[in-house]
Length: 233
Image (tube, rainbow, N blue to C red; front, side):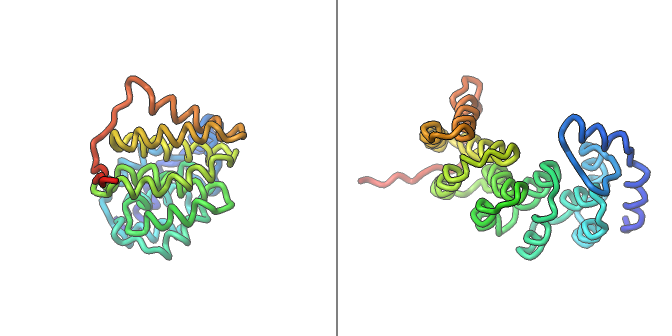
């Protein structure tokens, strides 16, 4: 499809009532949105297929829905560090932040370094992007060993006192995702959550409780991705 053809489809799919519903129910506050549900954008993305040039043009259109579509048809291997730094400050809500973080960022060669760099950002959704990327990276890289994920624990502990709702939820999400990667990391993540619970801070206690509820739950499904190569002490 050409850019004009896709934009025409998006305008026909748009419904201002849907945009209002998303804002009222899910706090998805947007500018320049047509009002299209995520499930419908996914279907359109499948129809289009991967197309990096079209994806970049869609982002540059400035339309909110077109930008989300960009995150779904962009090839992760074509994403550059410059693109990531250009896109990240434009995120205005959790929906578009997570769409880029999960669909693209976690699958790029820059995932690890951006998780670290963005984890200390001040804007709410730039920081959320770090932890949303980390949460998805736990499943995106099936070969990384435990040391890679344990290296992120200090970031999670450091940011556990950020009381902004979309940051604290992402911090908990990242910790829970690490803890579901394998049995070793499950034990480590539980220990980190318990350490966080001892921080004299309401947000930290919330994150710890939220994480432990899932990580210690009877119905938790833990995967078996690569684990430690234990060394004799």
